[in-house]
Length: 455
Image 1 (cartoon, one colour):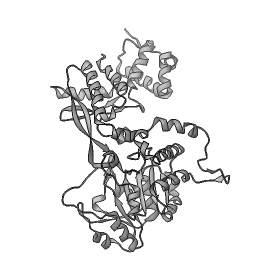
Image 2: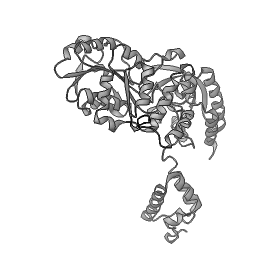
Image 3: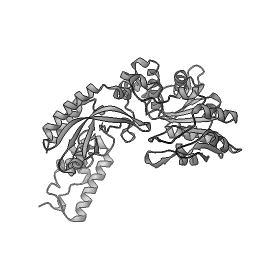
Image 4: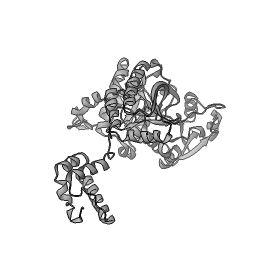
């Protein structure tokens, strides 16, 4: 029977080869904390396991407790392609390799090689955005919400911003547009109703305190039925006739017409600028298929004001973001290669026949390890996600699993999350759905799924 005198010291345990391996993965302090927590719990309860002197058993226990700790890759088989909780747009290993030599050594991030003086960190990306969108100027911050906040704080601090009630969106995590406006130091002036807003509603709301007209592209929702809203061109004309700037927050934003791949239409920044908007904000890690960034394009006079706002420094992106974004934008200069070069577009444009072939392989593997489940290949619909094309889905294919006991389906979803590379699906209609648009690494996925058959 184990005795408390048999408990090895934490320092002795950390010197064992098995636990040293864990510290390389998780860090010394985290492993040390888990060891102390285990031993403290035994002392409090007075109960000891038989293996208290076995260093290898400690490593197994700590490894199990930390198995789901920290960042790790997963298979996104949810049917939501740009999934906020799973990292949004996929990044390109080729692009990361391409910028590795740049970002791992000193670079001219804010240094003008011609003059030998301080430069503008946005300059390289700004030039790319000007070429691609036709904008007079551009700037970049660390995410889409930050882009809108910078615009509001710069152009309408202490004043009114006019927005349709139907565009007062809430995005993930209860993050609401009115709250962003309040924190930006603006006063929200709501016009119209949830489903119908007219040009005269904006006109009637313009007063001495108005500094900006804002139009927000729908995010994560779609209103249908008895509806009307004011187009960008009309709203821009109204703003300019009253000597006001007009901004459009696209939320997602793509630089190319997606319909060329039979995908749903999404307005581009260049479309919106051509309709008269003075500023357009959009994200880098959604339909653009790049890193998290908030991009602002538009007229020089307003972009310069944004750049001189002290808040811009607090919101600026780092060298990794700018380097990766620059290489992504360079790819858009050769649009014929985009579907192969940008992982997000490759996922969106994968032919249905390829998805069905993946499904056959995955189904075969699952049948061999889960004979008690009924497994089928079914037609499915994918949502693009993260506020991109909220009312549109695209054709897909899924492997579904069901069991006569619904609790077994929920238990399987948990087991999949516990695999060496967690597999994330969705439960719908008492079935577990595994969407094949996220199964491009099919060989790795099936090898991973084989672990379900192990005790």
